[in-house]
Image (cartoon, rainbow, N blue to C red; front, side, top):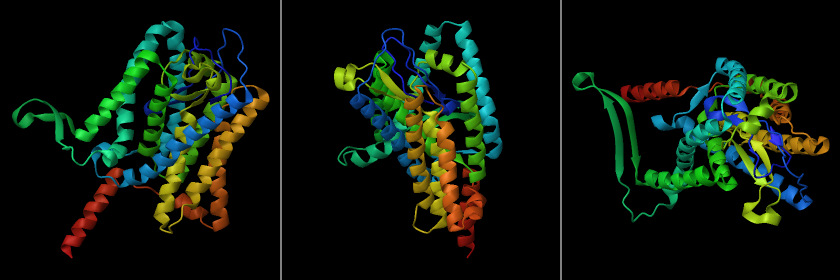
Length: 380
């Protein structure tokens, strides 16, 4: 859910989404305990333009990286494949998690809960940002600097009964990424600055689009359809999502101040967009890019049509929000656009059946196919 209203610095300016842990409750509503802030047209345009741009970046680059990720043989880069059963369960699990958080905040102290969440997302954010920076670091890392290899090995038992608990291999480039990410993490932990929040949020979104793979278009339709109903129900049907959103402090949304022109980097009245409005449509758009690649026609028709559909749906969300002066469940507009546009294109091109028959192999199946093909080549 995207947020069109203003939140003073003293208010918890949060949307709610934990994409990496199966919770998608990306709704927010303004909490204005003091005077009502009125944004200038320039400030509003800058804020929402920046949010749209920030939403597009992880979808575009995450989709491109998902193509390479699907071919990776590195265990740490293997994607998590979402099946139709997972997709059907996801809205139910998300609803239970959301309602559990609601009860949690009602019973326990908000301060201590958010302290635990801050530490939890600090660790996740550092790892996500480090993984996001890794390809860039590989390009800019000086060739003159030695890139040493390291291995973190943690085992249990001894002798023949010894088993590996952790076996993580990394190099100097990864260490540099980890140090930079840790600095951002400490900055976020101490200051909760909106720029640090956005760096973590962008990293979460990009990693989600890259590493969460739908196995086929039908699964994508099930997932988006279920979350479409989920988002509308919890935003318009109850106050649960709004209550959790007000209480939840974590980098699970992108924010941009509407008073940046007046107050600079210390601005405090934010427009915001939940990560679920990026990751959920994003993994479907990434699937369509991989479908384009599988067609081997050297075109990206379905990817670009769904990408443009996302821009249209997000723009429509902002328009409705400003018209009715009420926070909106963005999936209400994004899901029909992101599914409808590519389907219309497939109908026009006569490839609808082919699109719905496309099945992406799981990492294990892809690995076994590669082994089979290699053994066949050796036999020949």
